[in-house]
View 1 (cartoon, rainbow, N blue to C red):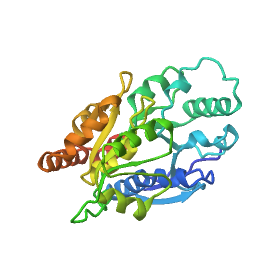
View 2 (tube, helix red, strand yellow):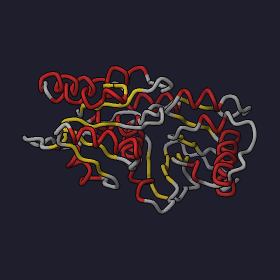
View 3 (tube, rainbow, N blue to C red):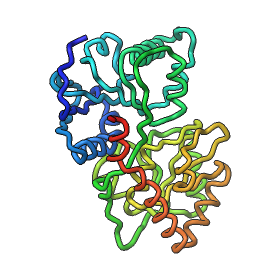
Amino acid sequence: MKGFHAMSNKFHVTIPDNDTVHTLSGYQEVIDTLLWGLREIGYEVSFSCNYLLPDARNIVLRADSASSALLETFPIGTIIYSLEQSFEMFLTPEKPKDAPFARIWESYRYIRQNFEVWDYSKKNIDAMLTIESKMPVKHVQIAYAPILQRIVRPQYQDIDVLIYGMPNDYRFDIFRKLSLMSIRCMFICGFYGSARDEMIGRAKIILNLSGEGIFTIVRASYLLANRKLVIADMHPDLHYEFDMLEAVKFCPTEHIPFYVQHWLSNDNARLCAENNGFDVISRRDIRTILQTALA
């Protein structure tokens, strides 16, 4: 490893560039929150894609996409901020035979044994701790910063329901059922920044759909910060964060179309739910969370 020249007031946030539009754009709000929070608590901070600074303490997002060979070049003192569902990798006793999973498996284990890890999920952390290591693992929640409040709500919202993310049969099936109920809905993929935010602003409800027992807190937190009503699919094996049960409206998949209809029919109740969701997420102040992680 390269040597680490500690600078108590300087952090650098980075993410590996794997040449897909979804990698950087999908985590932009988390990056913005980290940068804002670190500055607010008194640190000098910078950001770049695919580049680490030798004279700063680096915080790397999506390091699971890096090979073990690349991880070995990371400076001592680097922090890995894990934002993926990684727990299954840590609970796998033997190296997978499938080549892509084998590479990720090696990366995760190298990360655990050589770097301080921040993770948004307590379930991930419990799994990480099954691997012996002297390196710390800290719970750093997906959090709120005022700069996330940037979606403009038009006077007239002409989209009843918005679904966005990668297409799959599960999401398309719910989209089809909503369409057959004459609900004005849109499904979009690959839109980020102002183009995506404009459509979010026009929508009365956002569906946060997984179908795989995963609650995508990164997406939901941004919506809650902008006072959007979020409905998410409920699964028996889903690991919920307690406050999200209060902020997000969870519903079994088979009832989602009728649950959507219920919230569309009551503007006052929907407004109260939007404000409540904002109140919940805004209690996750990124400044407090970072101060605790860096103490």
